[in-house]
Image (cartoon, one colour):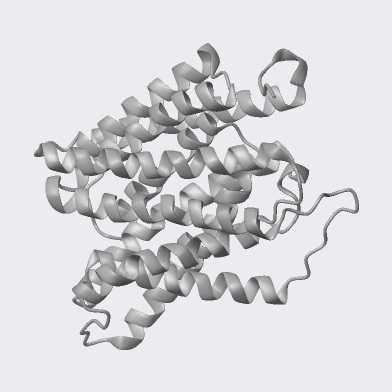
Length: 319
């Protein structure tokens, strides 16, 4: 991930995003186990997730040799700090506003509004700011993915919509969209974009942003099984955080922004599968239908993206 972002093939970027989306989905199941094991709250868990993830990213960065192509132009320190700060602020808004939306209007509505508004905002932003055209295939894939998301999350019924929670979810979607669009913009700028350094800097900024909220909620949880809690936190920090976000930022730098947003909808699919397989939740018709719609949409858009990358003359990836 330390290579220049423009040196990463689009096909590999798509694979990175698919793995990241699936890994993000495991965070919900692991968080549920954390809540069963201790009295840790959502904001405190998010803080420790980012703090421990920062440590893991730093360790990986120190241990891994970083080679830079001879023709690459280094990015000035000031610009690297600006990138890390802006990305970290977007990540902090994304996570904090989402947790607040869950508390205000419930998990189902918060998830649908945040993840549903994200692709729409990103598609509009990419068209206006980056000149990226989605096309009819992309529009159909986005529509199918959003329909699948709605069926998957709201199919069980019982959701309560509260305006304040919806507003917070839209703020969360805006933070996620800004983070994705900025990553794509910087990936197209050229220069030796060190994605591992950007990811590490973003997590340090996010950790600092979340620290006051975590202090207010209580940093140290109470638990009767500290060993299990530590293992769960280590998993959350390692797989759906350090690994997944490193893959996400690398892939988002080379893949069209709207495609990124749809592929990352694999998160609720992965979470639904784990909820059925590990947490004892029932497999419903809504779960099957929503999962199928989203997987078909993601697969179709990924194929179109890879095909467009192989034939740049068709305008699939306009400069």
